[in-house]
Image 1 (cartoon, helix red, strand yellow):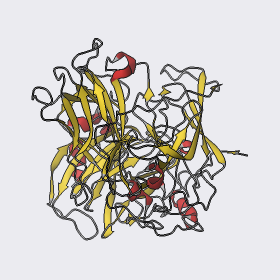
Image 2 (cartoon, rainbow, N blue to C red):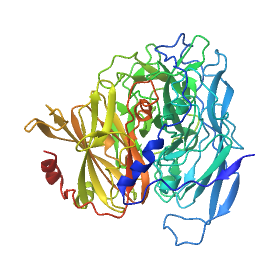
Image 3 (spheres, one colour):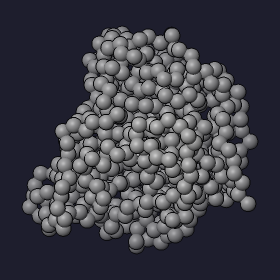
Image 4 (tube, rainbow, N blue to C red):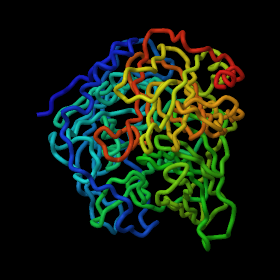
Length: 587
């Protein structure tokens, strides 16, 4: 019998960051260790590319309705009813990554109306209409090895559910242990999402401590777009002409079964290896979500030789980023997509009848130095010979909304500066830390913003990797820009006089974001508001980095730190006020 569990209050006293240390002793302790895994370096074989048609994930329907408690209207089209979804995580044996391959063992999320054998169904949320998601952990009992060759930190088979980019309470944020609850096999927990935020391409995934990668890799991942009434009036392509692609990299053994690989060498798009997509010569809105364990993608469109008249690539325009719409859409010819990042891109296939275009990638792995096998092609778009329906879509010059209406200057005026770091104290073992030193996940919290405050975070990266840094529970976040550092001191501080000129964020990266690419030998800065009191986390969104070395032989120390949002004003942090003042402070 499944029993209901309340989502636990985080194990800290709000506003007292040192309390985080009280949970440290239990981190990873007493958990059943797994036999040494076999890490894949390359797939034993690959199926023919561009044979199977790309599939869209089914949309889940609520299994019941509830009523919100009486409260003041949110001003965003609030409705009286709330939606309830029962989301069951389980093991499956029927998913085919290619039609010519046998079925592989996978994990999946399912709802009553949308059974899945890999990934999870799309859960659409609406501004002003709350959602309750009841997570049912139907994994085998604790101690069972689901994937004996995977680098699991333990065989507890516990789960959490993180609504990535959502502004929910810390108790419903899916915080990994020891700061949050993990749901044991045979139990449930309910997560409440108020959904009082603008439209954005959010998603959900497991966030189990030290096992996030080995749980997402075989399928515990799903798309959860937030919508609002304003979005429907923008005029972007919609319906059958708006498609979402979850991009993962994976490797397979000689039996064509998933085997865990840090980089992966085959592209998996919505559960299919290197699919094709039939499109019409018209505009489409493609949302790309990268949830590969560690691989970045640098995307572009390349024409397949001999297909139609040679031409320049279809126009691509970025209209959406992680947390909402860009105020001014940005035409691009290429696009960098780090793990955890999302971009909504309008691709215009007008005038490209009977052509084929490959979604190409030339990002090295690890990024940016390379060394791992390349994945040069992800999928192919086959353009038909004519439109079967009129194209009334448009790309407005300006998209106005509450997520992008506050200018950067106004955010900086109220912000204080916090310095953090990404370091590699020993080769191959990157860590995060405060301004002074690298720290483990279980060290006392040093990032303790005041609820309702604005902060600029500037991360010094003197490791050799780019790190996509994700902060939980932030509002109106925005990438500011970067400074190149020519030389570091041994303790990770820029040598005076070696900091280059300020480089503003590329235009397509200047929209609302919750993942920030921290490049090596750079100081990268972003600004955000902290609206929700409680304990959560900030971390690198490369799963192999956030999972850690404590019980994981993949080769990294946990790049995850507590984020304690409390009542105390951060008087020790300097005021930013202006971009010019920020430049001076960084130097």
